Image (cartoon, rainbow, N blue to C red; front, side, top):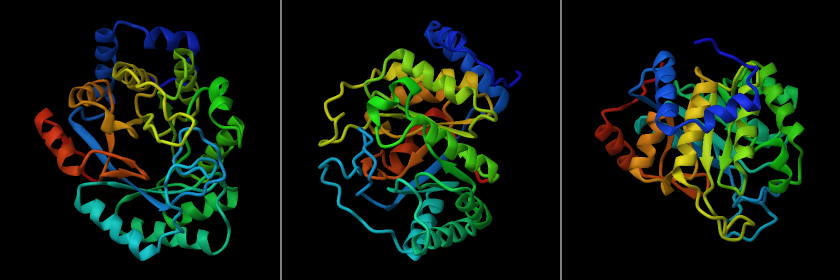
Length: 317
């Protein structure tokens, strides 16, 4: 199959709305062409600086705009981060991700600490990912030099719905950060969130934005909203898990070589729904009992599910 970057919304809509057995069959066929079908990459995500973020993302427990009960935590000590990375590797993770609740990456001592963290985690022979907010060209270049594998910066939703969820920055800011990461030679981790009140057309719009990036993001995290008391989306209805399956299958068809990551909110899905997501082309998950500040299934539960499905954790390349 040829990888394309010129998908239209009409094509994506037709794929997304095709009969589910046909959609999953097509996604699984493409998945097998580009990836070992039984392998799932295990990743670990650690909050290295928590809370007091000036952004007003309506889903986020760490926004300073909402009272969510999340305690503010200053930037972690690099030695403690390294210990967390060692534990993640022992649990089978091959990618270690570090998230800091910043709007922009601050210059000075804190950024120097982050660079030290990146160097020490890279020395463990782990893929290293960061999500730190908006970057300058110089910061992206220094992260690359320190050994950063990937940078996460999600688009969250469609351009049309974005302003209903976030008002403290615009969609173009997100795209510019992704472009800076790409320019520095760092791989891109970029996806979105479902269940935040968006329409089906917004889901198609998000997938269109991702699938027309050239090159595609190497990693595409698909999250389902983990509702947090105190945020504007605290009372949003649960997402139908089959919508998640459709989004993952469509992402797999549109971006065949990308790693599609079943990400936040996975604790709300049944084992059967997660199995369907794997069948639809998801081949990466976050492990560990917390994703930044929200719950996540335990490592033992994840390993038991993979074992029951006859699947296995991906080894480090």
